[in-house]
Length: 225
Image (cartoon, rainbow, N blue to C red; front, side):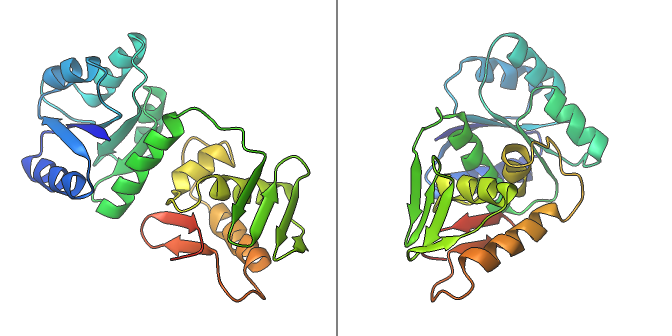
């Protein structure tokens, strides 16, 4: 994965370049908005991490310009501006996700990798299986160890999305957008409630838990964790 970091805080740049490199990703950085825009226009990056406040040209302007020019590279805004209105402005400008400072590097890495996965073409697998948990999209049937599990429609969508991304961390932002169709966090515990209910249905009474909470990052379904 190739990442372009457009950020003028040198300590943040140093920290993120090190983290991305240790995760096996190639990363370039620019501390100037105009230069960063020029680099992003090349279209050779899988994802952009863009600060809101930059010298030369601000982050919102960079992303608006890229979107107007047809550049669809996924964008994660990284900013100290964390109010709901700030996040909404970032998403309306063409950003795909928004993370406020200070942040946990594990969450940033999960969000970046999630954006790249989301940009890939959708698959049409009719059936997902994780260990002995099976979800059939056509029949809308879920079983574990051959035992039928009754799910509400929202629970089914939640499990379907988690199983589609089995073995990968799924962030709250991803769930809000893909399962609830929200484009920003409404500051409720809706995800926590549904995760708890789903965990009770697919894990309770079975020897091995499959639905895991990844502290500071999100959730993951898999036979390890």
